[in-house]
Image 1 (tube, rainbow, N blue to C red):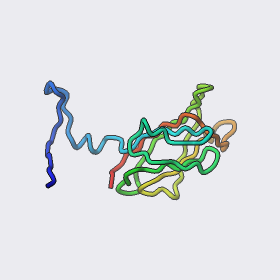
Image 2 (tube, helix red, strand yellow):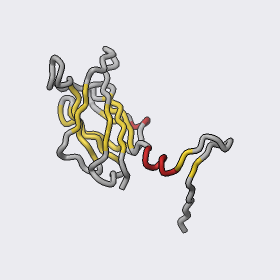
Image 3 (cartoon, rainbow, N blue to C red):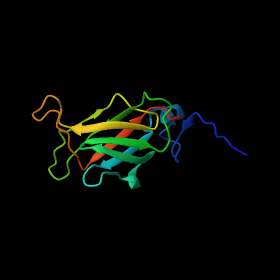
Length: 136
């Protein structure tokens, strides 16, 4: 037997700080994770949600695989790569427009197009990822 709980608003234990359930469902990240792109690149899964595995396609070129599919391919993700050793965070992450599926997306890490070294891709040790959209 399945059960269902229907509510319009959630409140904390003291009855304060309410939020509509539609906001929670629609505005929450549907996946997050961290990719360590150095050495043997990997998803750091002890601090992730809906993060399955990743593929290291090439230098600074990764595919992030989801545990549960998104409802379509129009979801949005945000990545801010950073080098922990040098403290430099002027890197940019770009999404591939082709090949994005409901269960995976590909991105690159490199210098922004308006800087010296534009187009150079490299592996970074700190690549936090947030993904927003509707789950399947």
